Amino acid sequence: MSIIEFRGLTKAYKDVVAVNNLTAKAEAGRITGFLGPNGAGKSTTLKCLLSLATPNSGSALIHGVPYQALVNPMRQVGAVIESGGYNPSLSAIRNLEIIAAAAGIPDARAVEVLKLVELLDVAPKKVKEFSLGMKQRLSLATALLGDPEILVLDEPSNGLDPIGIAWLRTFLKNLAHDGRSILISSHQLAEMQNTVDDVLIIHKGKLITEGSMPDVIGIGTLEEAFIRLVEAS
Ligand SMILES: Nc1ncnc2c1ncn2[C@@H]1O[C@H](COP(=O)(O)OP(=O)(O)O)[C@@H](O)[C@H]1O
Ligand SMILES: [Mg+2]
Image 1 (cartoon, helix red, strand yellow):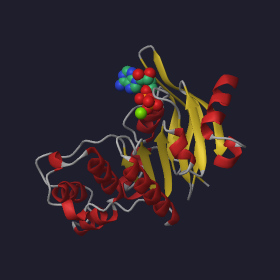
Image 2 (cartoon, rainbow, N blue to C red):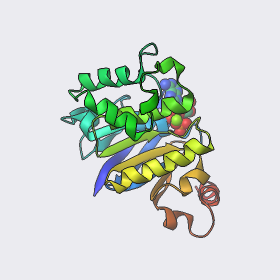
Image 3 (cartoon, helix red, strand yellow):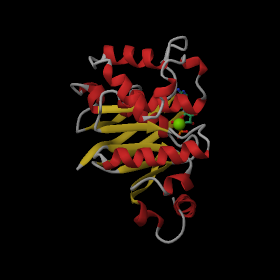
C-alpha cells in the first residue's frame, strides 16, 4: 500500500522550477530513499508533503490526504526538515516537553525519545551547547515524540561523522523493523545504498527512476546507476 504519494507535483520559485510534475510513491513498512544531487528539488518536495510549501499544481498526499487534513499530524507523521525550532537557552528535555505539551503528548514521552536517540545523559544540557550531531539526534527525538508510523527525514545524516552515520543507519533499520515507514532524502548515494529498501531518484526536479534498490542498481553501485540514468534522461 502506498503511504505517501506525489501526483504531478510541481513547485516553482519565480523562474526556478524546483519540482517538475513529480509522480511517485513510497510504500508502507519500507525505507524509501529520496535521492538526487544538491538542488534536485528534494527539500522542496518534502516541504510540499508537510504543507510547509504550497504546490503550483499537483499534490503530495499522506494516506491519500494532504498533511493539513490529517486529524492528528504529530502522531501520524514525524518529520526532520531542518535543525532549528528549539529555544537554544533551554535544555533539550525542556524543549521536547514544550513541543509535546503543544501536541497533547505527555511529558514522560520526552524522556523516552531522548533515550531512544541516546541523548538521555545530556538531557539537562542547553541546546546551544549541543554539537551538530547531537542536534540531529534531537531532531530525530522530536520526530518520534508522537510515536508516528511515518517518518519524513530530510538529509538527517548531514554533518554527522562516520560513527554518527553508522549509528543512524542502525537506528533507521530498527525503526523500520518496528513497522514504521520512512522517507529519507539524501545526496549521499553510497551511504544510501546500504540503508534503504526502495529508491526514488530525482534530478532537476524530475523523477528519473523509482523502484526497489536491487532493481534500480542491477549489478554495480547506486552511483553508477544514477549516472547512467541521468545520461539517459
Ligand atoms: N525558497 C526558495 N526560493 C527560491 N528558490 C528556491 C527556494 N528553495 C529552493 N529553491 C531552489 O529550488 C531548487 C531545488 O532546491 P531544493 O528543493 O532545496 O533541492 P535539494 O533539497 O534537492 O538540494 C534549487 O534550484 C533551489 O535553489
Ligand atoms: Mg535539501
